[in-house]
Image 1: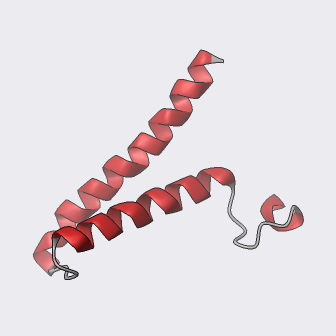
Image 2 (image 1 turned 90 degrees about the horizontal axis):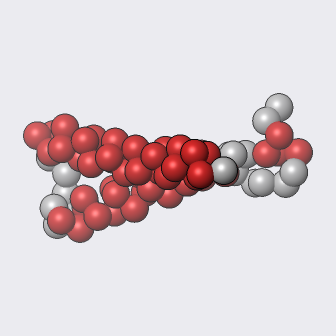
Length: 69
């Protein structure tokens, strides 16, 4: 069992997983808004790229914090 369940996190996600989930959700929301609430199959590579950039920002932020410690 994941420790998140033990400490009472109802989602069962670690803090990092929560940050990644939130970044993905924000980017998906932005992409839907840009595309008038519709994603075509042809849009998926660009959407995936943008989501990857958001996740990279989350992970890069972690390495910056680790390096400065």
